[in-house]
Amino acid sequence: MKKKNILILDYSVDRNATSDIRPWMPKDADLTSLFIDTEASFPLDLNKKRFTHVIHSGSALGINETMPFTARAVCFIKECVESGVPQMGICYGHQLICLALLGPKAVRTSPTGFEVGWKAVDFLEGAQARFGVRAKETVWQYHFDEVIQLPGGSELLATSSHSEIQSYINAKLGLFGTQFHPEFDREGGNRAFEEERPFIEKHRFNVDKIVQQGPTFDVSRCLFNFFMTEF
Image (cartoon, rainbow, N blue to C red; front, side, top):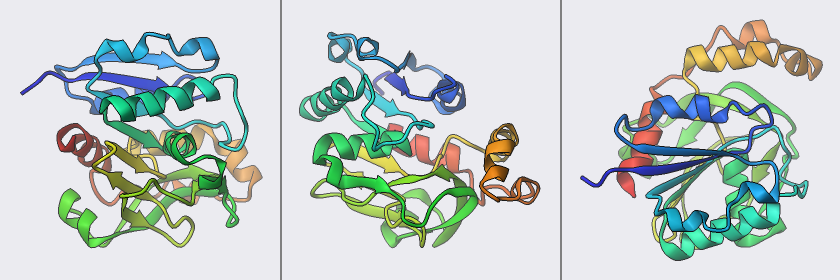
């Protein structure tokens, strides 16, 4: 089996996304991580590194705000599609991929507001077969924005009453996206909620109740393994 050469693009403001994702990567993989905050964060020769997989992380940034790196990120995402490099997007990264390929019409601030906590999503039949999950499972959510349009040929994998597009796959374009955060198991996810307690409670959510819950399946291992083996 070909050795994985993985690139993590870390858009997190506090630079912690890589440490949350790294434990779920293949132990023998070559792993490169870049913190993205400026145009210069994207080396011009980045696509010459022969990465086998690219992961775009989540972020506290809003997808509707143009950042110094946005134009370069859009170019890089398109280059990956053209060269056949599989890409996984998580929350902000998921939104960024759709923005890059479809433009601003593909994303928006969710009209249903802030979604935070361990929340149920509905997995469609195709996803149930692929992931070995039940029709309804609980995952880690923390977002204000959402994707409302997917690239042509995409298959919806998961949905919810809050955001219709919770997960999708596009085999032709080598894309896999999740609105939720698969990098968090119960321990890591609840630690993150505790760290964000003041902000969450400012928005009138009860953190004490949130941290009594957790995921209903091994979402981290399941979805990252899926991305590494499906493409």
